[in-house]
Every structure is written in C-alpha cells, then in structure tokens.
Image 1 (tube, helix red, strand yellow):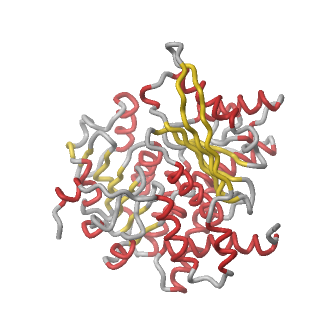
Image 2 (spheres, helix red, strand yellow; image 1 turned 30 degrees about the vertical axis):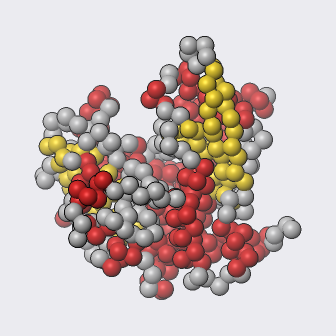
Length: 425
C-alpha cells in the first residue's frame, strides 16, 4: 500500500466533465432509454464564453474571461451558481452545469442545469473592481439569463452582494425591477430566509436519513468536515445539533482536532474574526491533508472537486461520506469505496438543499409573497427526505450504490419529460 506522503505529492490531471460523463454512462446502461435520446440528455445545450474588459482601480483596463453553460432547460429554466476563481475552466463549468440538471431532477423542482464562472482572483481585487466585473459579466449575458431562461446563484467566492449587483444590472437593462433573475440575494431584495444555510442543512438531512438506514445513532457518531466555508461550517453546526460529535475540521489554511468534539458555534464566531480555523483555542492543530483519512463515522468533503481518487480511496476509514462539495469523489474511487462498505451520499442528492431553497426563493419572488424561515425549513426537510428515500428505494431494488441510483432517478425523470415534449428537430 502506498504511503500517504507519496499520495500528497501525486498530481493527476482530471477532467471533471469526463467524470460526469462516466457517472452518466454507468447509470444510463441500467435504463431502457433510446441511445439517441441519451446523447441528447448528456451534453450541454449551450456554452458561452465572454471576454470582459474591466477598469481597475489604478485606471488601467484588464481583460477577464467568463463562462456560462446551460446544460438543460427541458424541465424549466437553467439553474446554477457563479464562481470566481483563478482555476475556473470551461470543462469545470460544463460539469457543474450537468450536475445541476440532475440535482434539480432528483429533488423534483422545475429547473434545468446551468453554471457560470469567471477566471479571476477575488482576494487580489477591491470591492469596486469586483462590482464592475460582475456588472460587465451580467451585461454580456443579458440575452441568456432571466427568470424564465437561466437563474444564477452564489457559488465559490460569490455571495448575496454579488447577486444584488447582478439583479440591479439586469433590472436596469430591463427598465423594471426583476428580483427573480437570481437567487441567494439579501432578504430585503427578495431573498429567502434559510437560503444561506440551505446547502449545509440539506447535507445533514441526508446524513440523518443515512444514519437511520444504517441503524447508527447520531449521538454515538463522530464526524470530520473538510472545508469550513458556507457549506462546511453550516453542515458542521447542524451535525452538532443532530447530536453528532464533530472531532475534525479544516480549511485551506489548516486543521483542528478535538476528540471530545469541537464547539462549532464558538468556532464559527472565531472564523468570522480571524478568517481561518487555525489558532482556535478550543482544539489542537491538525494536518489538513490528513482529514480525509481520519477514523470517524461521517466524512463531509465540502471543499472542491476530485479530493478522493483511486490513489487515496483505500485510506478512507469513514463509514459514511456525505458529499457537501460537487464531485469530491472521482468515478474511479467509487468501486473502491463500495468494496470497503463506505456508504456514499452522492453530491447530486446530498448538496441539493441549496438549489431546493433557491427554487423556493424564485417562487416567492414570482408570487410577491414570502414564507417564514420555519416554513422554508419544513419544506426543505420534506423535499430532501423524499428525494433520499426515492434514491434509496431504487438503490435497494437494483442492488446499486447510491450514486448510480441517484443518476438513474435523475436521468429517467428528465428523459420522461423529453419523451412527453418531443424533440424539435
């Protein structure tokens, strides 16, 4: 068995979109669907690349590259976040848009899949530069986005402020206020209560159902959370409230460990002030690169894609992996985890809470009538619990692991709609 030091130094280029295609193909062979129709379902319908000139604070112009991909609009408007990151690629955005199609289908909301991104480093840009970049990007996509076409949301390095800029820019071009063009907005601008916590809350709702299925008690379970951004921190908090002892957390800077459980409420307040988990007095320092291999009951990878691969999957000791991030486990790692009896809750089910409450926000904006946070949370619980049980039923009937079953459920739902609508050709 290779040692972990060697594993850390290995860098293997992985096409995230190719991984999605593998996941699709593995499920498609289990379904009685026309091969031509499967090809129609598989690939993005539209990929847009835009070049964005932005005036920087020093008066110079800098060119940025942005993407927006619509994978499917068969079941409704495309839906998906926008990320700002130096490593954004069209391949990644296409993969994320595809996952959004399947997430929306699994939880039964009338959206397709979309995703966007801009190649930039927000940590090196001022607020004014980010606003000008966002507005230019929105203007470049005016023909593509809209409440009935494509509804963006926050993602990596974007937030409710970013969504407010997009909403305002779109509204100015439309000559009237259009709140439903984006979700994840500030509540005073038509955002939904419970939206910020939705993805992490959804992760924990699926974990709760998995624990029931596996006859495991939350109060006797431990967890490790990789990534302490919005999804990871909320998932850790809700796991703690469920009764699970969260013993390990990490962010990009470092990790923490406390065998008696980390006080997540206190850690969240600490991170607000210090911008990182390192130095938190309620836990010991821990090598962040080791968090995947810790001996816990529940592992929540809530960072970026391709964290668990065929090279390191043998080292996973967790009983449950709850995919808070998109694509943290590669297709080549799945058989290894399955052989080792690791129960993987796939991303297209596990982290679908965000798109579910985004749908609630879109509905509320269009009605002009808003729900209490309690109503939002009750509806989220209903959607996520039903989705988990639907996927679990297919998994048990087909003796398949949960990811395969999730793709089977999602592909069949979209295929059914296409067959009813027909293909305009």
